[in-house]
Length: 435
Image (cartoon, rainbow, N blue to C red; front, side):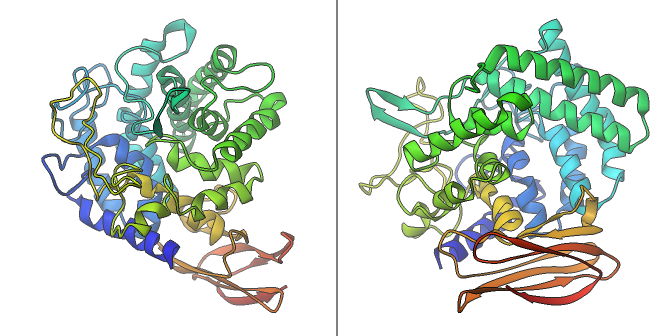
């Protein structure tokens, strides 16, 4: 019931904020189109609702407010509220590349890539100029891993990820997206150039932030999640970095990430086979966790992990520590942390793209059993119709029921209780497997 409520809260947060522009919250004095919030939530948003037209319109706004130097505003339509000039922050500005590519993935329509290509290109080239020959984007103002876990403990003030790790990692992410976009659009020369840039960024990132034994920079969950998610860790260090990451999760027993790391934390754990750790994060009920607000009566996603603290007090912190007189920054309808939905749909329900095929023309169904869950039921309305994945454990066996829409094909991986899979390649129709 708590996870069902979490999903309901994710959807209500989206409904309350996706009105003309993706606002961060629909109440208090803000109600602004923060680019970072929208970027991290985009895959979850696209699974839950048809957001193709919504984001296509808003990405036009992003391009319209983009500066001549290619930097992207923190808020679109632009309003200078926080930050030096309000442009250029990593993860926020990267909405210019991440969101168009996400829409392409979910709907298979290249038009948004065509319309936004110059904007995407301008943003990446802005970061390239800022990075210089060192290929590390470490200049300017950045929000960092906004609202990451913090404590009052003298020996551990909080999970602070160095901002240059985040900005350089996102430089790689957007460059990779731009390279793939150039290939899709048949721009071979651009694709070759950005491929070269990407390799240089990876080399620079490794030399600057990754030790020989796989320790990534600040040694935080966000640092590892970004480096591993964006393929920045050399193959020979990958297993060590992933193990360090999983060990940090085990050490704390809870999430320590903020807006930037949270969308990736469970996806990366599952990518490297640490599904038990990912399920433990999801099912945790104590602060900090996704279910803690649910136990406190939340009906939408909170802005802070501790919007209401365990002692019952209301979090009265302002946006920045040195602005004590500023208004309280605490929202109970702030969808960013709802980005966990992406992992829930792709891993627990197992609904994903097969072989990178956009628009669910080719579908992968591969649910992961875990977390003490005994039944899961999920549907997605893609461009071809309904995709559904439903599984239940009964009498020591797993029964998987799947629906595949017309004019598509699918790879269905039917699980058993010990994590073994049986692969079936199918066309449209309804299927039942028991193992």
